[in-house]
Structure formats: C-alpha cells, structure tokens
Length: 269
Ligand SMILES: Nc1ncnc2c1ncn2[C@@H]1O[C@H](COP(=O)(O)OP(=O)(O)OP(=O)(O)O)[C@@H](O)[C@H]1O
Image (cartoon, rainbow, N blue to C red):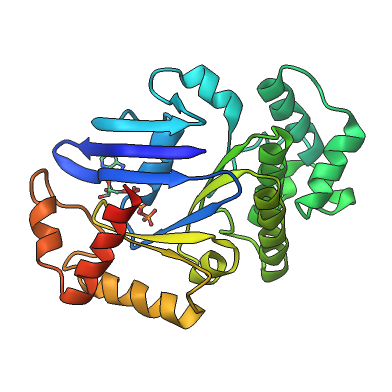
C-alpha cells in the first residue's frame, strides 16, 4: 500500500506538491495525470526518497520513506521514463546485475529470460549489447528489472514513453497481471488512453494540488479527456506551481465545475 499524508514539497519557496493525501491500495492502479510541472514526478520522487518532503509523510506498506529508506527499498520497484543500463552489457546481463544487487542473490538464467520475454523483449535481443538497443527495448529491460524484485508496490513515471503500440499494449496487460497479484501501483502519465485502460482510479494534478480523483469504471475515455482539458484550461500557467501561500487562494478561483473536482481531493483524505 502507498500512502501520502499531507505530503508537501517546496523548492526554494515554490510549492511543487501541496498537502497531498492519497492511498493506493493493494491491487489498485492509481494514475496521476496533469500538465507539465503539475507535480507528478515530484510525487513519485518523494515515494522513492529521491527528494525529502518539506512537510507530511510518504508511507510504503506503512513504513515511513524518510525514516526507513533502506527498508522501504525492499518493498518498492520503480520504472522511470528513461531506463539507465550498462551499454556494454547485454539486456540479460543488465537484468542479472540489477536483480542480484536488489535481491542480494542471483536468479537462474531461465527465470531472467522469462521475465524479459514477459516484458516483451525478443529472446535473441536479450543476448545482444544494450548499446544497440532502441529506447523501447531498454524500457522493456527496465520493466523486467522491476518485475524481478516481486515488490508489492510499484512506481512508474511515464513508463510507456518510447514503446511502440504493440509493446504499450503488452505493457498494459502486464500491469493488469500485477494488479491481479495485489501490487499497489502509482503511475505518472500523460497518456489518457493508458490511464483509462489500466487505471483503477485517476487523479488530476494542477499546480501541485490533486484537484480531482475519479474511478475509471464510471468514466468513458471521452469524459476523462474532457475533464482533463477543462482542468488544464483553468490554469493561467500550465501545470506549474504557485509560490508558497498562493495555493489555497488558487483553488478558490476555479470555476464551479472544478470546485466539485477539488472536493474529490478532500474525499481522498
Ligand atoms: N529539483 C528541482 N528544483 C527546483 N524545482 C523543481 C525541481 N524538480 C521539480 N521542480 C519544479 O517542481 C514543479 C513540479 O515538477 P514535476 O517534475 O513534479 O512536474 P511533472 O508533473 O512531473 O511535469 P512533467 O509532466 O513535465 O514531467 C515544477 O515547477 C518544477 O519546475
């Protein structure tokens, strides 16, 4: 389970994330949507302890990320937008290296090859050097590295960036399987289609605030697109955040349709 409690991050007085309250339960995929600079990556980075919160807490399976970073690492897997690998090693060797590092022991080669195949990497590519891989192929190795940990919490930041439609479709199926296995998944994405397809709930962020949360069951793709665009058009500066103290005032300036959306965040508390 992933939990944010009044989670806040300011960079030099600029509030990138403002009092986020959110719970992502086991078997749930929560998709964070929002314009550039809305605070999606900041949220992910706080759960990964890449940045320290200014206030509030991020918890993974009930463990405070800032207080016990090493313990949290054992429970969490992460797929970034751009997966960094050793170019002179093959995909299989990279997977072996990172898996051994994370687990403290090796996994047999046939298991690693199965993980790469599940991530959509062709078998012959697994033995080739990563320096010759496309971005999408590197992404697939990143997906396999994350799956090898068998973590019960998964953080994804634009994971389908660079994947072709077939690979993106395979990735959606993979997420469905992880959801069925009880993994709690938090994904930042710009892909409304993916969010609607795999998400259990979606949340729309604007200027560091989670202004709306919705369950995808009662939502068509066109509805999601309309709500997203309505919210995006309510800001005078894209998704970029206000300076400290401005945030409360900003939500009061929103049109009536959005006031209801803001209530969605209060429900999430
Ligand atoms: N290290 C940093 N130092 C200063 N400001 C930062 C830093 N990281 C993020 N920010 C600011 O915090 C705000 C939120 O950024 P964040 O990367 O979380 O947005 P995002 O929603 O992930 O955007 P994108 O869709 O472009 O990836 C932005 O205004 C950004 O400029």
